[in-house]
Image (cartoon, rainbow, N blue to C red; front, side, top):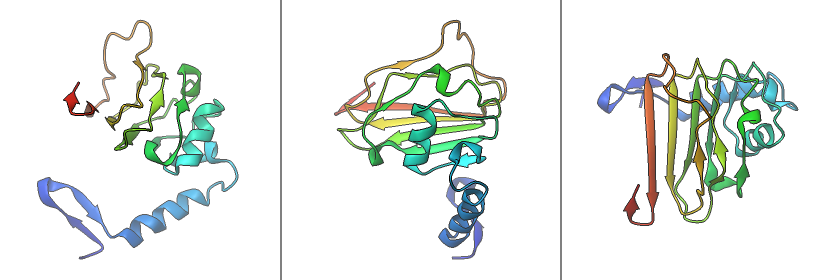
Amino acid sequence: MSLISVGEYSTLEMHDLIQEMGREIVRDQCVKNPEKRSRLWLANDVRRVLENNTGTEDIECMAMNMDLIKDLYVNVASFEKMHKLRLLDLYSYSYTRGVSNLDLPPMRKLKLLDLYWYTRGVNKLHLPTGFEFLPEALKYLRWHFLWGWLKV
């Protein structure tokens, strides 16, 4: 495999070492304060920022495997200062873990929203009051929930 290649379905793929190097560069931006980084992907960092409502304008991308933590309690205040958030990717493949009460505020710059759960742990997903349209910048939306064998 080359360092960077175009994969099946025209997806851009990179070698694991290149991805890890990029993550370390971002992590080194601010080791002790994840809310000051542009990208968050470590479960404990994402959880800390969302549960403590310490998100900042610096955060542009947030991705997390929900299977790596217990329940996560999140509300609109968790996202209020994340004006530059472009990517939100929360996913779970477990039956026992998930998000409880996820409130999403209007995010004007959001380009990718990916919510994927294969779990019974998701209790509620709330959109904000007055949420009548998706952001104009949104280019990709995957909203996929499986409850046991029943697709919702």
